Length: 262
Image 1 (cartoon, rainbow, N blue to C red):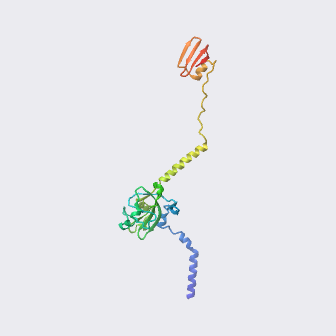
Image 2: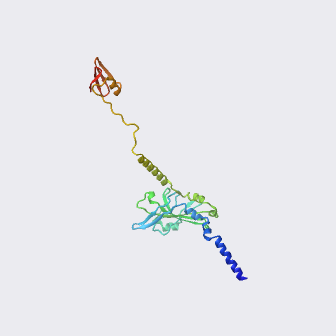
Image 3: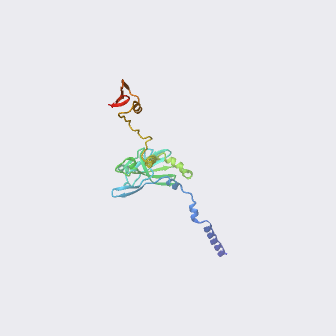
């Protein structure tokens, strides 16, 4: 009896594995809140060379919206995170401030930073975001690589039900994504496209070729001169001799034909 039960159990296990493969179950699992939030950012990648820290790959640029985020030099072990809760940003405690006093500064409102790491702790209802100063964005040279951390604290049960846009709206009260660079890129692309189009069309064509300047020659009739130059400003009539006065010319006709031009 026991042997029959064991055989039946093994057969059932084989059927379950064949009917519902474990990889399929894993693939159908919805992404976690942490995975969804991390997908919203490009995190800065850093390294080091002979001169010290360096940026290997820049990340999404964020703009600081509230004062109170303390940043420390890259060699500092302590981070002294700020805490955002209920619409209020609180700086680090006095003990941590005393530890990093000589190697720290506050990020200014409007200053630009990179996200470097994001962690979500649903049971404790908090999200931790680590930041790195975007020195090139802020015109800092040589770069300083100041780093910081901010904790977003939510009320009990919030993260279990909140959507990604809802969480991002809260985080955007402190750090907004900077899209000015994207607009500049689009303008640059549009300008380049215009230049390329003009290059493809070749040099601009004149709508009409410039007309040849009028030519006055000895022997031309009065009608020919008037057709070329228009009516004169003055006419001096001396019988068989006439002088037509233009702005820059004096044309003498004898017996109706050009005899002299001055």
